[in-house]
Picture 1 (cartoon, one colour):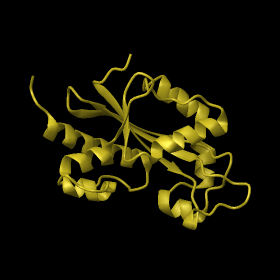
Picture 2 (spheres, one colour):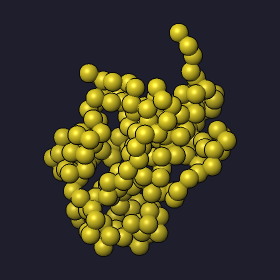
Picture 3 (cartoon, one colour):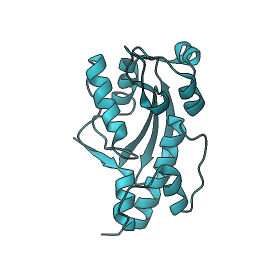
Picture 4 (cartoon, helix red, strand yellow):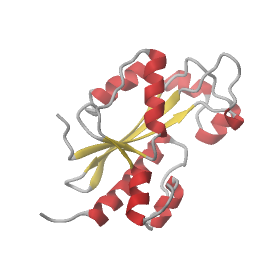
Amino acid sequence: MIRFNLVNVIDVEATCYPDRIFPPGETQEIIEIGVAVVDLRARKIVDNLSLPIKPLYSKVSPFCTQLTGWTEEELERIGTSYAEAAEVLTGRLDSKNRPWASQGNTDKYFFEKESRLTGVPYPFGPEHFNIAGLTSILTGRSKQLGLKKALRLFGLTQEGTHHRAKDDAFNSARQLLEIVKRASFKI
């Protein structure tokens, strides 16, 4: 049964190359899952973590290191497998029984792809919310805003490092809390 009082706000970073052109034999894969847990009743972020993942099907290019800050060596040293990260999501973060949210639908696509690639079951339940889409609907925009612009729209400054999944999840959670605050009503 889905419990809507807690929401897992997710952001992922993935291996990358300039112009998204991967060398032969490599495929894009998740290298970090960031999670910020939002307690909707308390109207606050109650947990924020990073799950670094060792890549199996691609290398961490210099371009990717420049963008995300992750190096192949660091991920090899502290990263886990996607299966272990999925266990944290489904166990500690109860991801099958909580709604989850992300900026756009790209993160959802990455989890679907990673689960197919590794054979690890998809770690989420059916309820996914697109925070960028909600922002567009509530503000009457014809297209979705990126995280930096959305934060500015709500009068928020970015905290942490952009393209670090833990920090982007935290900032997305702050955006979600602003949406909830502005759209709240009493019954």
